[in-house]
Length: 137
Image (cartoon, rainbow, N blue to C red; front, side):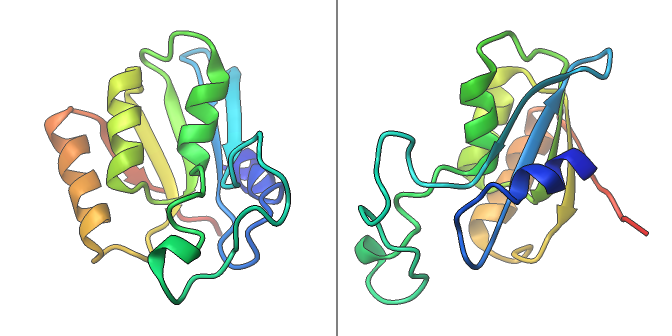
């Protein structure tokens, strides 16, 4: 989880920095990612605003840390474990399930009651993906 925390520091998001690391069955890091705007865009193309009109906020444009790590992996992720600093949304849960990842470990669950996070938990359950919150001392 410490590596996911380090990956989160690469995010440009001023309010919510999220990091992710994917590890294979042997414990080798396969990929990492963080939440940021799409790679081929430049600073200022999108706003980091959280409020106002949805289309003018960060939400439709941010690539989540899990998606970033999955897309950068360029290898079979079957049986891998994913460590992420924030519980996954439904779209990331779909990508995690499709990629073959078996285990998800997360640090923070601050949006637990939001519908997209409830949907993610249901996707994980129905996909038989083990999900566990990690508590750091």
